[in-house]
Image 1 (cartoon, rainbow, N blue to C red):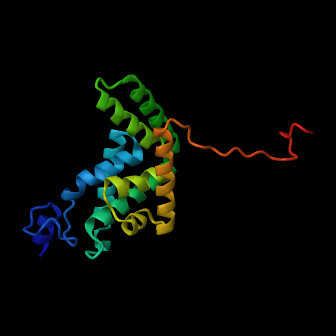
Image 2 (cartoon, rainbow, N blue to C red; image 1 turned 180 degrees about the horizontal axis):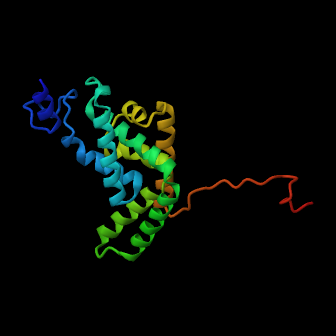
Image 3 (cartoon, one colour; image 1 turned 90 degrees about the vertical axis):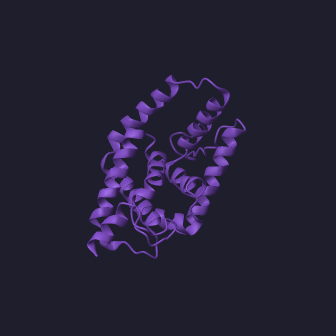
Length: 195
């Protein structure tokens, strides 16, 4: 019994890779890495995030429910690890984001399609984290709305709202418009010029 579990964890069992109950962690690594890169915006941080998520998944392997599927389970763990790390490493994340911005400016793409791809990537990475995460899970990983909402731990309506805002922001950038930022002014306060 233990040997079967070991081989299926390493992706060597005879079951079909499309079986949602199959505990094929290795088969999910590309998707986990893509999602981690979308969240962290940094290749090295993404690898660290995947490593930490796999470690947490191993520690909590008893909570795996085959009916849910290993992909959604691992994506949810990865997302939760990202949130935990972000809360505890705010200063480190700020430094990493600044270094990524400098690196992106220093490497222009030599061909037109590379330039266009870089522009799309830059626009995607400029989205707020919650919009970027929602769009990545639905548009890139192909998760359904319900599964993506479950992975992020939010209601499906909130996911739809985030997707709508993300798509609107990308369209505005594509059309050369700056994203709309609402400016609030305190009427009657110290910034009121009539006083």
